[in-house]
Image (cartoon, rainbow over all chains, first blue to last red; front, side, top):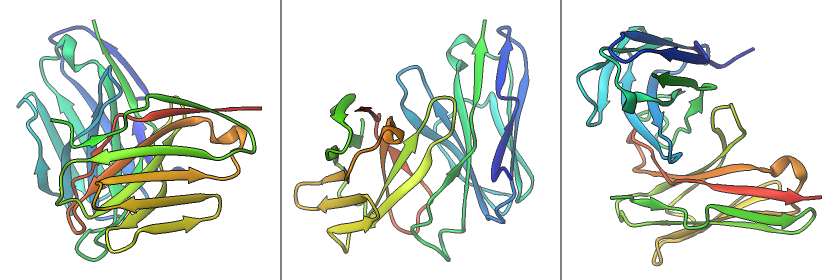
Amino acid sequence: DTAVSQTPKYLVTQMGNDKSIKCEQNLGHDTMYWYKQDSKKFLKIMFSYNNKELIINETVPNRFSPKSPDKAHLNLHINSLELGDSAVYFCASSLDVWTSGGSEQFFGPGTRLTVL
Amino acid sequence: DQQVKQNSPSLSVQEGRISILNCDYTNSMFDYFLWYKKYPAEGPTFLISISSIKDKNEDGRFTVFLNKSAKHLSLHIVPSQPGDSAVYFCAAKNFGNEKLTFGTGTRLTIIP
């Protein structure tokens, strides 16, 4: 039973298009995240939501917009895709750090986005 | 500015021997550290963590050591097994804060 799932696993698209990546967790966690792993394999946080509220927004272009319809889902919508957006995007979830301060994050399998 | 560094991009170890992966950090505010393991085409999976109030934490074959004065931590795997071949990421955070800062990873290869 998959704990954190992402769709699609692979996404190939043209520059300028708009695309979405979906994430769902069935762990009952309160907090969800989006990470980007670039070509240098550097894994960097983009956004974090706690109970549908945005709590972390790292310096990410406005073209990236996360949406959390409920605490089990965090989707990532990207407008006007650019070549530099090509990367692997990971979704993750964790317990609320206010109740479990050091809570480890559980990651999805990743979505490899290729912009042509 | 990379606050968490793993200076060895790769490491090869004989099966059965000890694997030691190193990690350095610059931000003295970090007080909680984690190691993640990642196989190709999969997401990172949590391995072991340590709080800054400890200097050692053990879980089966995995032990993490923390040297706060040197801002250095290490992961020891004993004995190393072929299934341990993966990329290992060190990560750091402030306890009670969601933001996790990752190192660039070390690719560990266990030689049978």
